[in-house]
Structures are given as C-alpha cells and as structure tokens.
Length: 459
Image 1 (cartoon, rainbow, N blue to C red):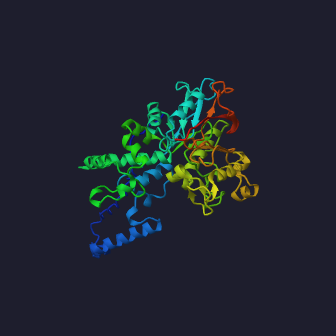
Image 2: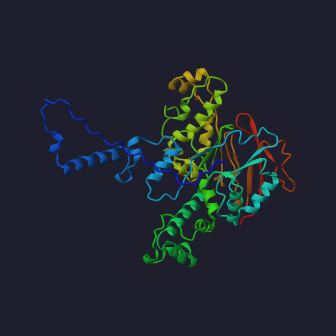
Image 3: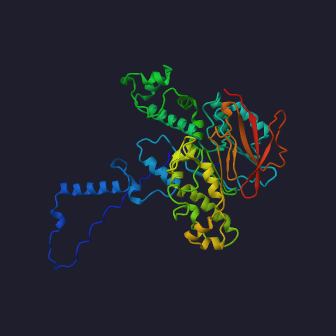
C-alpha cells in the first residue's frame, strides 16, 4: 500500500529571467544609447506592475494569489491542482493526497482464496465494524479491505476505529469528517511548535471550553486565530488532539480517490462528475468525447486505453480536481455548480449513469466519427466506468448500474454495509441471526459483487 507522510510540495517553478542581449563584436559600429535607458526606474516599476495586474485580471487571479500557475497555464491533473492550491497558502493544514492506483495484482479476486471487501461510512461505530468483519469472515492475510472514508466522528468509538484501521494500515479514501480532523491536528501541531504556543494551547485545553465559551473569550486570550468555520472544542478538535502520531500519519496519507483499473472503478468518499456540466458533453475538452492520447494497437492495449481515459475523467473535468467535489458532492445545480446539499439539483450519481449509458467502446468506426456525427448517433467513444462511494446516508443503499452508494446510515441506527468481490457462493459469510438477505448485484462489465450488512445501534 503506498504511503506518503510528507506535506504536498508547493508549485515553486520559477520564471526564467530575461537574458541580456549580447554585445556587438563590430568594432566600427557607433554606440547609441538604448531608448529604454531614458526611462526612469520608477517608470519601469510602474510598467511592470501594470503588466502583472493585467495578467492577474485576465486569468481570474487577484494580485495576492498569483502563483506559477498564473503564467504556466491551468493545472492539468488532480496532483497539479493540489500543489498549486497548497502553494497559495502560507500554512497548508489540508495535506491532501490525490490519487492512488491499485493494480489487479494487488486485488487478485480471481484467486478463489482472495477477496476485496469495501466498507461504507463507519463513523466511529467500532462494535458494528467488528460485527461486519466477523460476518464476512475477514482474513487480513487473504482479503483486501478498503474503506470509503468518514471512519471517525459522530459515533461512540472513533479512537477505537482509528486505532484498529491504522494498526493494520487498512487502505481507504479520506472523507470530509476525516479531513476536518487532519486540518485540526495540523493546526494544533503548528501552534505547539511556536514559542509559547504549547503553553497557550494546554491552558485553554485544561479549561474544557465548549465552542460557544471559546468564542466569548476576550481577544487577549485568543493568541492564535482559529480559521473561519472551525470550532474549538468540537468533536473534530477532540479527536485531533487525542490521536497518536501514527494515527495522524495514517489519516493524512489517505488519498482523495483510488483507481482500480482492473475493475474499471473509482473509489471516492462523496462522488465525482462524468463531465464538465458547464459545457456540452460532446465538447472536445470533455474526456469522454474522444479517445485519449494512447492508440490501441492490439486487443491487450484496450485495457491501457480504458485506464488512461478513466484517469482523464478525474484530471480533465475541472470540478473533479477540487477536493470539495470528491469530499462533499451530492447534487449538481442547473448552472453546473457542485452542491453539498441534496435537492439542489440533479444527484451526481444520476448524471454519471446517464453518461455511462452513452459509452459504446473504441470501435474503429467510433474513433473516426466527428463530433457532429457523434451527436447524431447519440453515443460516446468510451467504455463505462463505475464509482463506489459513501457520504449519502439519506439516500441509503443506492445501487445503480454504474454507481454503488453504500453509506447506509450506521451511525443513525440503520446498517453498516460492505461490497464483497471474489466471494464464491458466499461460503465465507455468516448470515446466522440476521434476517437481511445477502444481495448479489451486477458490477462492471460482467462481474458481480455481494452486498453484506449488519444492524447498527445509534449512539
């Protein structure tokens, strides 16, 4: 399992300085002063600032947020976007990690002794997680366990869940609640590293303040400014200050997305968009409107092209390069904006399934079609891709053809759910004492997965 405990590198590519003009080697050439030499230094500075301001306005950047990307073009991948955003911040508490790819060799579900188990939002419900792992008879030596984020907060035993998963280095993506804990811990560690910061933090910590009590403190007591929207004394703050360094390291190495090319699947916490809804689906900038820059020369290469196009959905759809989307999206508004609220527009999963139904493969005829011909035939040169996600507890178990939502609201007293791949006639699943039937669902091109869940008791 890949690990990266370092802060994301900032985009620090310098601009090349303008080189000096070479002196003339012609001895008989008469010297004349350059017209530029007659311009005073203040005038030169003024011209330079005007050019900078013009560049900033033309690229929708303010002077204060100018960075290498302002001059070098827009980010092209999720990692570039994260690096640019980190470079704009004096202190980066987000510590985002972009995309992990897990190959088929790492999840050999064709092996009858191996399985892939994907678990929905746990939210600190350790007893229920234990029951679910027992029900599927999880074997750390043979099975690959992956969670979909939001493993902590809201439930009664966040620290126990975190300790369990960190100790086993369980693969997963980060959720929006995990992200808040990561940011709080980054802030706490920064404060404690400053002169007098540890004493300040520990004195306030000992006061056991609620968020409202902290807000009422006089300014002289607030030596360090809390970022907007954060709450001192919140559950996220509490988990962040108590977790061990190894647990913190585990959390901040979790990526925003995982790609499983052998299953043609993405794992994300909340969701992702199949295209940029501010433009036509057949616009040449849309990743599914054309073949990627890899031309298949043999049947084996089709898998390489599919994987490249799948990754392009994440990298070339601008909304998917924003952590907010991957961590929070529920709906897409009529104007194409990502919303964290249900009912603000079309559920992203509905949009995803509508687009995947247009994918008809990479046939030679399809590859040669012009955009207008594609529009007439109403198909796209792509193969379908599946997204497995959590986050949407109100939606519950939401099993569509190309999206599988498995946050079934355990922390609200409903169920904790897993998808099991490679299960051979569910011989390794204990369904005794549970009236819930084991549901088998179609997955990907021709695979199947089994839905397994356990009852939860609300905290």
